Each structure stands twice: as C-alpha cells, then as structure tokens.
Length: 141
Image: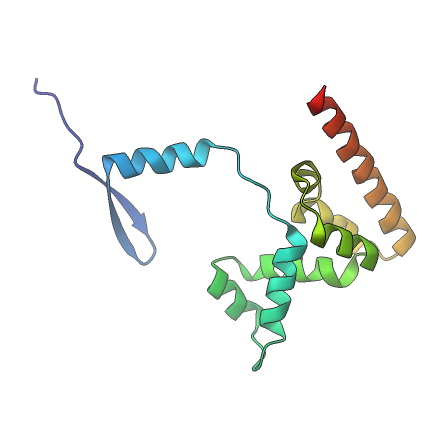
C-alpha cells in the first residue's frame, strides 16, 4: 500500500467551505489545546453597551451578529454591568489579574446578577474573591 500524503483539509462552515493546508490544520488544533487567556466580562459588556448606545442604537441581535456571538450572550454581559454593584464592576473592569479573571467569568457572575438584594450580591462576590485568593495562593505554592 502506498503512503498517503494529506494535501489539504476541508472545514465546513455555515457560509461555505474553507480549505486549509495540513500544516494550517495542525496549527489550529494545537492552538485549541493551549489554555486560553480569560477575557474580562466587564470590558466585553462595556463594548456591547457602547454599540447599544451608538447613533443609531443597535439591537442585541445586530450586536451579536457583528461580534459573532449569540444574542443571549450579549444580553448576559450587559446585565452584568447593569445589575452588579457599581464598585465591583469598576474593579473588575480594570482588573488585569489572570487568576481573578478565571474566577469572575460571565457564566459564574450570571447567578449573582440575578439576585435582588445588593447585600446578598456583595456577600456572594466576597466568597468568590476568597476562592480566587485561595486558588492563587495554592497555585504559587
């Protein structure tokens, strides 16, 4: 049997096909395996809010289409900025600590934003901060 050499790989998308060389396909696979740098959910939310408040204002669906995310994701991010305590939103918006950003993800903050009581929100966020500080200490030890 003759050895088979892969010339290119076809990736199917909704809007058509994409042809990649074997090297490009391997590079993409390696890139997916690497640990992603967490994104700041507040910065993303503020970006969406700027789009929402632009002239003319854009709908959640239009913002989602522009950034390649779902309409629900846009809604979730904007809800974080509107519902979480202002001092926490300001702190997290400026945060550069990778460990803190791994703890304070949009998905983890979503249930906190749904809480009605600001005191309960602060208590839950403090628990997250203690968990972040504990994981950072364990990671450096």
